Image (cartoon, rainbow, N blue to C red; front, side, top):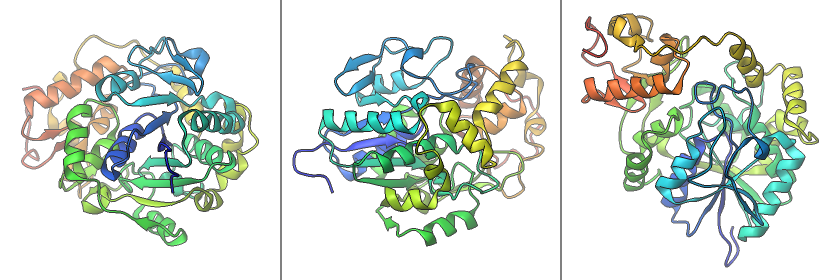
Length: 374
């Protein structure tokens, strides 16, 4: 537990989108003056340069005794991060975690931030729950950040807790694998994220390109759905359980996650990526490098105008009653942030009653044949 006079330090373990979930958890728990920390590794549709960004790659960070702080004026050269706008809209205090320094560097950063702000405990927050994976699950496609930050939190010498929200909503672990993780760890079950908190966080941040965290906020508001988020995967389920945080101590999760231990001595990101490859894990960095070589020139056209809804939804899972924005833009092979933004705007404008970012209801659309923007 936090000591008297200390501030809660919440860490977005899976990337920038987890800051949304961390803020919602902090508010729902009633934390006073919480502090946040997050890495900056945006999807290639937002930042075409492969891999995570470090302090040297980012402009207009604020230098503090606790480390580099992201402000509303921070900019990502050659790409775009939603974190500066999130800071602007929420007013939170958000520190950058430089993943390029490996686990040893991250552990030193966590100690420095905690000492500066007076945090006696770390709170890692993960939307989806893949931080609790063993590391050999076949659907695990984004293991690097969770494993690096879990390992750093476990080795930095500060007591810590892992909190999972939106269980299963990132689609990386199957329901069986999620159940296995719960059975293997002594999770503490909490009350669901407050409906009022979720509504306010969603109202402020529903523009943010993070599906798992936004779906969690919708679940906390009582929305139920089965959402197709990726080709070939079972739909993810929005229900009351998805809005319920589960917490356990960092050490227990680090013992289960075999990747965390393997990365403990790393001093740079490429070494960590090599180790993950040797473990047979998907290399997100490798996929981004390959994509950068075949990236087409982004068109100024609106490609969904040339498709009917049936074209875009013809392979949606039979058990789904909603489809995610990411599922649609991948079907259209969109590559740029502007295209993504225009797609979201068209969906919101033309299918207002069916669309709540990041998902479109399929109810009543099964026989649609008109263009998406008609």
